[in-house]
Length: 103
Image (cartoon, rainbow, N blue to C red; front, side, top):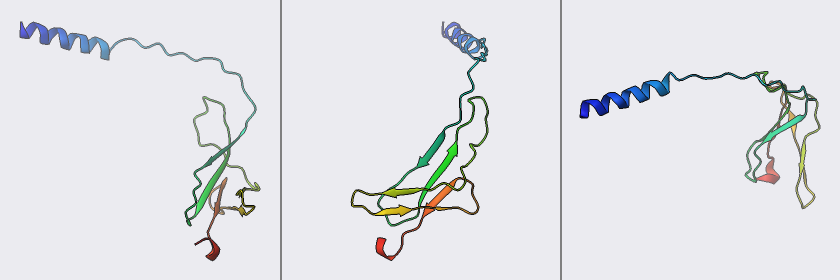
């Protein structure tokens, strides 16, 4: 009986593993690219990074292109503004470094 149960179990697992899959390729409309902001900002006196990118079509599997020459800043409720500087090595990456006031 154990052997029968084990055989049925392995048979069911085998069927599940090799079962059919239907690949579908939906026709999605080409939409206009939008700006994508990727950031995690906190109040710690450490380097803050914001990535500004442009979206791509859904099936275009590649890194999002960065946005150059963007004016990136964050303003707090007290009125202080933090201006981010564009990275010279990474396209679309902007950073802010704390100064002596911020530590």
